[in-house]
Length: 385
Ligand SMILES: [Fe+2]
Image 1 (cartoon, rainbow, N blue to C red):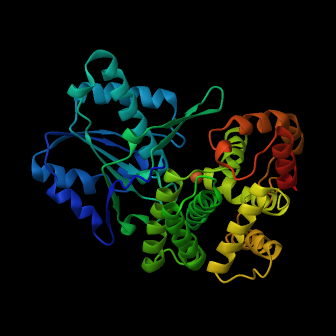
Image 2: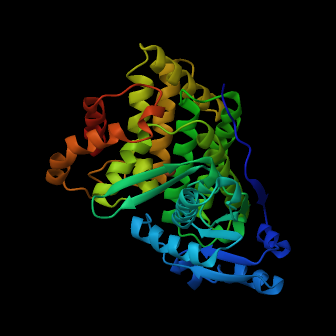
């Protein structure tokens, strides 16, 4: 038996944030970061809350790659405040932090009182980047800053009740962030599409997301004020999130996690960099295996959808490799780890450990082709350049 979860309700398009005007409740907790406060985005939430007479507290201490310590602070806040509304606004980090805060709050209460008496707050996620898809997924990643370890959490209770996709919030994103987060969307959609857990339901969202990224990411990168491109990319991010949340990610993310954790590369940048090498490994080098052949067929299918050469399996896969390299180059993203400024000696020292950590990553089991530590080392070495 398989499952495709249709949640949350999506409010999208211009002024989607007006959803908040009809909100009812007693107390709200807003989880965000300082940047959102400075940009005035938090005010777009507090204003309707003030008008509706809903009390609120703003927890704006979330940092990039939220830490265990931040989640514990947020947990104390939510336990004291007892909100009936939880609103996360920002990039993936505040949304992931809010999910983790709610997750641990419910788990703590489950130890003390019977489940039927636990009330989950009405959870609203407002993404301000077009990348993580966190507003529609059941995943959250927390970082142990001391060990650089990523702590993945996954449970359906973390899926927001409402996602507000207001592209107006993304128009001030700088080109580098547009590029990185956009390539993260592409990686989500491609990994979900070639995943062994992919289904007709997840494929339709992945196909559309890939098509949109291919047609609109460069436009959004080159002209941040192109609102059509911004709106399309915001929707694509959400679609890719729906797809991978119901399917899976693969080793592209496992490798991006270790590269990001060890060398401080942003999530989208690491994913973008690894993408051509992972497509090559999954699609070209393993066409003789049953799984590899299936993956290659899926890559070929994507190439066909976006109108790239795909007369043979090899050509289809090659088109996907070149397409991802082309997008990276066009948007000034590094195409090797060396180009990303990673020191060779440090890389060599950490290579085996990174491959071992990537093998244990939660995403690795979702890869279309089974991998070993040596495979992951080989991909990393090729990506180093
Ligand atoms: Fe990602």
